[in-house]
Image (cartoon, rainbow, N blue to C red):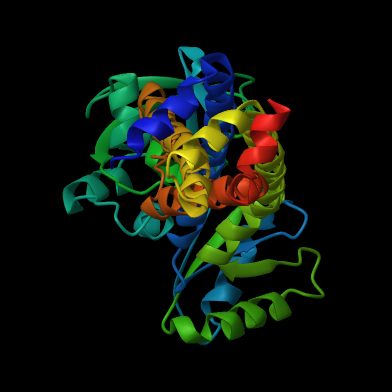
Length: 384
C-alpha cells in the first residue's frame, strides 16, 4: 500500500489521457456485459424447455391437419396429446399486443410452462364457456384486466367469417407464471370457438404438443411421429420442447459467435490502446524513473509499479463498465413492465471480465515494464 500514492500519481500525470483511456475501456466492457447478459438469458430461456414434452410442426411452417391427432395418440410412449393454433392481436392500441393461443380446453395445461398454475375451478369454467379465456397474470396486470371482464381483441393476421377482425372474450381465469416463455403474456382461448369463427384454415392447427412417458425415449418417439407422416400431404418435424426453443433462437443467428467476434475485436483494440498509452507514458517519464532508481528504487519495483498502473486503470474501468451493464439490463427489463424476460448478468461474467481486464493490462504493459526494468540511469539522465 505504501506505493499506492506513486501509482495514482502516475495515472494523474496526464489526466485527460487517463480519463479517455478509462472511458474507452469502460465502453468496451459495457458492451461485453450487455452482450453476455443477453446471450446467457437466451441460453437460460432455452434450458427451461421440457425434455419429456414434444412439439410437432410442419417443416416449412404450414398448418397441420387436425385429422392427424388420432394417429399421434396411437404412437407408443405418447401419454397425452393436445394442439395449439392462434393469432397475434391487440387491445385498444397496437402498443398493447396480445398473443392469442387457441387450445383444446381439455388439455390446456399441457401447452403451458411447467410453473404455470391454473386452479381447477378456472379450468372448469374455461371448458364450459365458449368465449371464455384464461389470461396470464402478467398480461392481465399490464392491461388492467380482471376475471369477469368482457374484452375485445383486434386480430392482426386473422379475420372472422363475418368480415370482422374483432374477437370478443370473457375472462374466466388468470394464471400466474414465473417462466420467461411466450405464454407469460398469453391469452388462451377455446380452439372450437376459434376454428368455427375464423375465415380460413379451418380444421388445422399450428402445432401438436405431446407428453411422453419416458424422456430418454423422446428422440425415438419423435422419429416415430415423423415417420408416420413422411409420405403424407402434410409431413411433420418433431423435437423436444427444449430443442424447439434452441432451434427458434438459432434462427435469429449464432448469437454466441457474434458476441465472441464483437468482444474479441473490442479487446484487441483495448490491447493496442492500453499498450500505446503505457509506452507513451513510459517515454514521458524516463527521467523520473531514472531519479527513482538513483534514490534506491529497485528495477523490479519500478517495473511492478508500471504494471500496477495499467492493472488499476483497466480493472477499475472494467468493473465500472460491468456494473453499468448490469444496471442497464435491469432497467430495460423494468421499463418493459415485464414484457421482456428478466435479463441478468451472471456472476461468472464479472469474473471473466475482471480476469480479461487484468490479462489485457499485463499483456499490453509488459514492453513498458521491461524497458523500465532495463533502464540505465546514466543514459536516461544524459538524454534528458
